Length: 582
Image: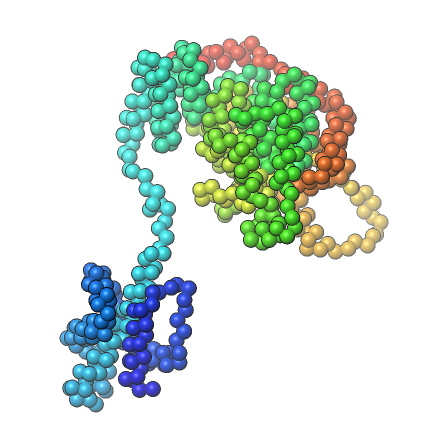
């Protein structure tokens, strides 16, 4: 093919691109002629094309409106000729050195001028192509979040000044309505600028709030003060001799075992669950129980039992075809949207820290596993903040909603979709800490460092008797395990709950630590919905309670121990120091 035909083909390509909008999914199939032409281009010609392309892209933007008008006049050929002639003149003035010398000597001046004019279509074709590609790419560019979510640069002295002003306005407020609004302003200010919490504590926010709570009788003000003190990390003195901790393992529908055992404790103590414990921690199904028993929409154990059976039937009823297709498409066998809807319906959308407005609400947490970091890490959803300058070994936050905490903690892999919040991807906390008792003790010690641990009650969700191989000397034919068996063994060891129990049982005294984990007639799936199987689990729990009656009695007695007089005196002295600002 001659050089003139090659330029003609390239011109046709340029005209085609002018008529058709670029689509990133559309692939341009070059024929052998196109490839042959491109392979003949030298390095200097490619460098010239690159330079002219960048210059054309810059110069074409201000002339976009005039180019549009030319298209509307249905005269693209004239526009192309005039545009190319202008570019040809500029190219002759400054870029003739890049043309091969043999072409200049072999042809006369008139022929050389025509050759140059045709050769100049190459950079213009590529510049037009690059322009269309770059214009499309500009539309699809994803702007990073850090460029979009740029908070106004508020200087430190402005935040400090605003914090001081809000605290002074609480002191100077005359009416109850005005005082309540100023406390709400303080909460909003700290929510917008988290660093203001540090400045508020330095300015004596805890002292101001405690004095206000002591003087006022208005319940609305007391409710707001309870949340404000929780945000500041202040913790009221315990009503009991020490810290009483409840830990609940994961296990799906097997949570009905825990409900039966809690009923026994309530029967022995004559108190509700939220009154028996100062700190409640749960993972997966334990997080559901912690939120229902410790949240703002508290229910009785009878109501929780019925709710468990109803929700399990609605969520875990799934056809095999739909479940399998959903598993392939979204990595979730069951309907995650329905699960989230039910959580919002029964738990509400209140933020965790706002549950502290209830004077009877205990401190509670739900644990999930963050799986998109370099290492899988536990994440603690708290309805409290830690005291000033106290840090936990576990990352977490109090700014999530209650249903979000449960949703993240119960996001069992392959059962429900992963829960994405911010830059964290949460899965079921049971894949990392299926027995959260150690995490609960750690968090409780950060809240009450000067108080002893009075009682730790840890509830499991069922186990089957272990088979111990005693006669190891007898030779037997042992089959090699399959890959499936290996996988399930690794999964079982990762979600083991008894290892934590063994460690805590050695560290804590017998009259402090109580572990209840019933033996089951049959280890059932966490998504079991057959009524006869659920009834069998409840029967196993009652049988276990009868066999461990003394242990339940001892746990109930420990939970009812009152705070000693010397401890109350120490609490009063500490309060007076805080009120006086010491």
